[in-house]
Amino acid sequence: MLPKTERALKAQKNNMYDLHTHSDFSDGSLPPEKLIEEARAKRLTLLALCDHDSTAGLLRAGRAAAVLGVPFINGTEIEADFTAQLHILGLGVDPKGKKLKALMDLHAARRAERNERLLKKLADAGMDVYDHLPPVNGLPNKSVIAQALTAAGFCSSVGEAFDRFLSRGRPFDVRQEYPQMSVVLDAITDAGGLPVLAHPMKMDCDHRALISDMKERGLWGVEAYYSSASASQTRYFCSLAREFGLAVTCGSDFHGPHRPEAQLGCAWRDVPELIETEAFLKERFGTRTVNFTRGVRRTFSMDEFCAAADRAAAELPDDLYIGLNGGVVISPAAKQHAKSIPSRPLFVLGEYHHGGPEGSYITLYYGSFSRVRPGLSGSALTEEISRVLKHEFRHHLEIRAGEHDLEYEDDMTVAAYLGGGEA
Image 1 (tube, rainbow, N blue to C red):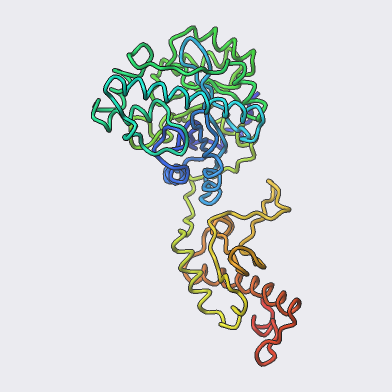
Image 2: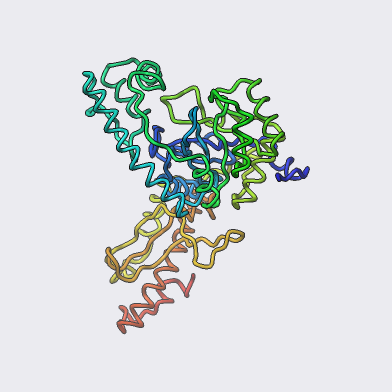
């Protein structure tokens, strides 16, 4: 099921990764872009964003990962109906999957209804926290309401809010309806994803029976390595994974600074089963491998890029800007050519736009530059931006000359503007 070649194991050795993280699109405190920055700072070699019952943050996370060169796969964490709290990770899901999207929409409606009931019950008991709800990108969940209880002074921490008020069996344990396990597993696999049983050591149930049942319904892996798991718990769930022929994964359940006990990458261990899982996922989802043990090649920041672009643009003749009323704009995107393929991605560094919301303008793509020219800095970066600008200005001037039959000052040709037609 998983690759066990010596070459795959050797290639992945000493690589730290994390397949269970959250952003502020669920109950995490960091936006997707900041999460990716943290992953890069930690030198993670693979990251999955698994927001609760949501895929809304994946596009932003993927874009940031492309810019910063962080190997990334989509993910989500979905709760299913069970006697204990059952969470299932979906690794590598396509957010556009019909069954997954329908399930997310249903979750959102049920959560909104549950939140209203919970907040009203709290208010009726003299704990109105509506005005203390922190801003979130998606629908608030119980963790967000716990933060509001803390901010309003009704408890000293999020943990206390759950222990006293919100956990199962507590006075404000207001539940929502969850889908059946089989429905969740089917939605994940239908979206091209791999279902993983999340943090089973937190569940009070017959684990062997649960995993056996889930395996029959499409379970792919078990999160045996987890931020709060003991060594004996990890060994137990690794043995169950082997017994049922399942993959073993690791996840911190990172939420941000407000949960310091779960740091990015903290669940990873340099063991064969996790090395094999990383190799399999990268091969399955086409994620490139980064070997940080040989050092990280620094790339330039957005501020450095903008400063270099300003220098390059200022050095070009003013005559080039005739009719370019939109000027030169910077995009953070990693623009890919229409003929780009996963095995040979083709990135567009600059692009001329004839008309549009800003008129005629040239776009420089920071994301593309940082992907294909990451080692540039100083004058070398300015020179490369200048080369791309000249290439796009040529396109601009040729269109104007061809469409509008313009005569340039002193009868200069496009090639003369560009120093003999330099591309």
